Length: 280
Ligand SMILES: [Zn+2]
Image 1 (cartoon, rainbow, N blue to C red):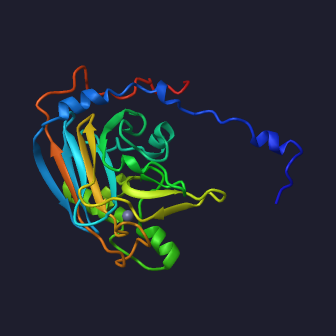
Image 2: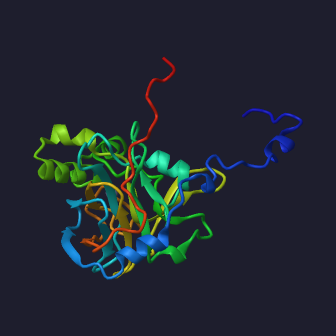
Image 3: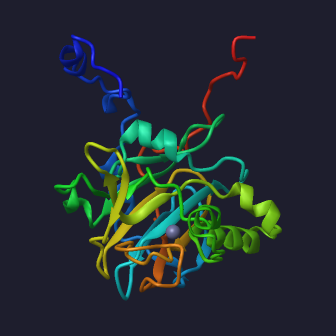
């Protein structure tokens, strides 16, 4: 243990400064998105079986909805640009820009050198949850994804239906890749419906039973052409454990909706305009 300096109290009492004030981000016209989305027909449906994953295609201007069916279930979401799978969802930068848990009006940003919105959240029936007394919230970008490597590290066992493996198999099947080619493209997720936080005092990552119930959904407007993949986590509602066949698991439903018109004034965002000279 180190000894606190004499001015420890004063140093701790310094007021925090928001790293990325929300008002400095490009404005989101939520009403415009909702007007375009209103009445749009469902044009594709995919059921994600428990302890497995499926891919889905979404064009820029379409909307996709993830719905809880049958029982509480957490989903792990990956997104890639349909034109270039090296452009993928960047959970760390999304967390820095919007916070640890996402909500209506927040965006899912893509990796460097692109850094553009891939999707915008336009509806969420769990918005009421906010943050609970433990500091837990839903739809986090703090977890990574359950995976067989950490499972082996901690238990010594090999489990093949972690979200990482489910997403790898789904992408390989969808894109015609080998498992070895697909695996490095799988990335840190949006934990859909998962309830997580950090324990105050120790900062340790925790999870608790998801408040999601059948019929709850979260809806995204696709800003660019996307390939998505969703895993129905082997942790089920993530109330106890994952990386095993112990938890009760349920399917998840993915629906794509095709609006007749685009939101007024909307254009699919271009990649970052930074010239990539990096000072040379
Ligand atoms: Zn998982």
